[in-house]
Length: 609
Image (cartoon, rainbow, N blue to C red; front, side, top):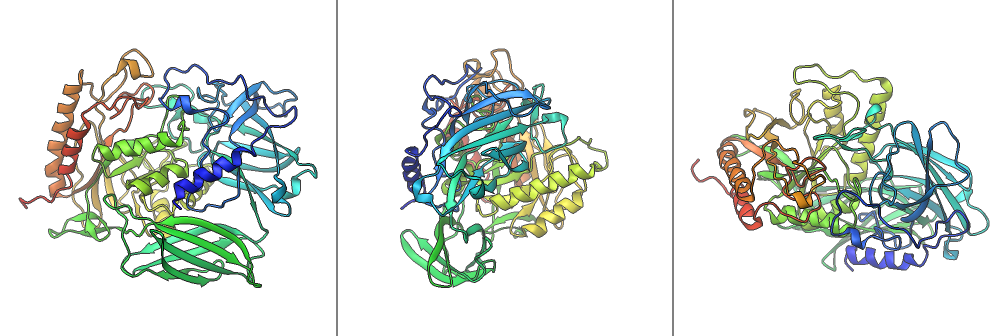
């Protein structure tokens, strides 16, 4: 069974479990989205009974789970006040409070806290199980109570976190969850991406609260906590480590790899150890052929009884810097030089802000990116739900993954920022958690810790730590402005450009941002007045001509040594109108077929060399 079909099947089963109880459960009728400046075509598909129903962790799927997305109660209160006795109204989770799809569309602000409350019931079949409460992402500081008992506090707006709530459950089936969320936005030092209290030009509306799926999962006391999957195409092997809970020390791990319904390999090992699985003549993953192997991992106790089983997938691919026939450093995918070209992808939505309205909307952005002839996207100072990376894996789109920026900025000639200890610790904690949560996705080929001096500090240490923590991917020490001669690439920005950094003996030359050609499509814009872009052609024809001119100038740079380029950007965002698509995704601004033809020329081998 295909993974996406299984996830839909599971979510349909759990719809019957999503019942709201007692006075703390909001009434579902009467809810509607707020009237925002602009909505997408998918907004009509969003309802309290159907909001991101897909299983949220596609690389480690369990068949028994409960989706807690839907209507919760909410209140916005001054930060120094305790839990409110009376809540204000309903909020649709997982959309941030400032978004139209939340039904609230109110600013929370640095001096307030956003409170959530909802009830749920534990299904009878979960008796004697450990119950895990999962949050995909909550921005930024979240305190969680279950049945009036504090479970824990998490700080980090982009990384998933979980709590074992078993010992806090009531003997009766009805339970209560309460969250208190505080987000200082650009008044704090925490990673925040492009969120600001006063949006303008390239800075956007601040978001607060839950913005990815919330869900419950029953497990045995001994269970699988995470997987670490490392492909090695040169040795026709994949290395898998199953990290397990306490109580699994004497158990064994059984691994089965599937190839289009047939068994490709089987082996076993111990929890916590690196297990080698040989795959004869492996099918390699690439944008042109995004083949994914099925994966099943089972935890077996010392009596031979299965205690846990998870399903997932992986791709066999390799990314490296190596010299071409002319001795120039290139980015090599599966040991072959490959020019990486794609848009800067901000991942913002006019109706959901940080949260896409539906899974179909997430997929659409990737489909259009591929349709336009790109093989890569740079996920810019934001992290997406795992479903976005799943579609990149499935459809074949390479990804450069940025770390969301925070703290202060430095100029192009400034030394590295000196962060406070608290600021540095928080940045590095979130960086590690983000890498660990995404590291199994074959689509991701590069980590980018800093962009244009935003929060850039101790660059050599950070770049070196990332490379040691994940040696299977490339490291871009600083995209644009403040290169410190670290990592695998030298990255410059040029608007509208293009431009190329000089070739180096050990690193590849890349153009981390260029273009930014704007076209204001009034009926599909965040604001009706003229928006902002680096250059502003007046018609679709002028935009296409200007884009073609950029690529004509980019081609000889690629021939001489430029290894990758990132065009700004996938979509318009708020007042920015330099997207390939309008902000609501209703308009592709240039002819898709002609644009794809222009882009494909960059991948052709230059025959004049």
